Length: 179
Image 1 (cartoon, rainbow, N blue to C red):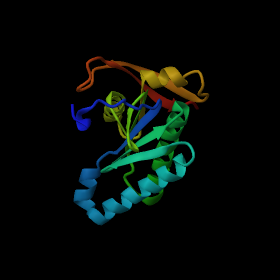
Image 2: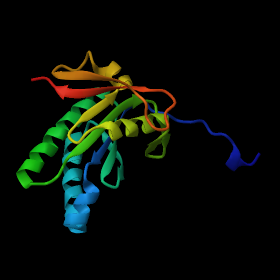
Image 3: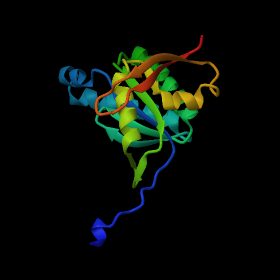
């Protein structure tokens, strides 16, 4: 067997994967133009970068969305809720359509350089796909690790959900700030 075909050990890391997606970005770009779209992405980058500094990292940009990583799922969910609040505030202040869907999943993705890949990344992406603009949804795996540790956050069970490409339904919860 050639060295290129030799099986290598998979390195994994345990934590929370977060996906964000700007809702309506394609239409916004078509109507407002590329310059306005780039400005909107710049606002998103600034808000996310400022908020997650020291708590997590941006794994990669995905067009109008981001993939984020947090070692601690509580930090991930807190950041997701704070991001929604900041996006809403910025939208109102500057009349920008920062309507973002956010999905969080806890798992053990494979590392590929600074990137993360694998089943748990796919689950996180599917959870984000289910979220409505302005909503934070989390998987049951994430909820199980944070529910007792997060004061002031409610987890509304939405039930098991069948998602494209996943062999088993995934329990989904909506995160809401109490009060």
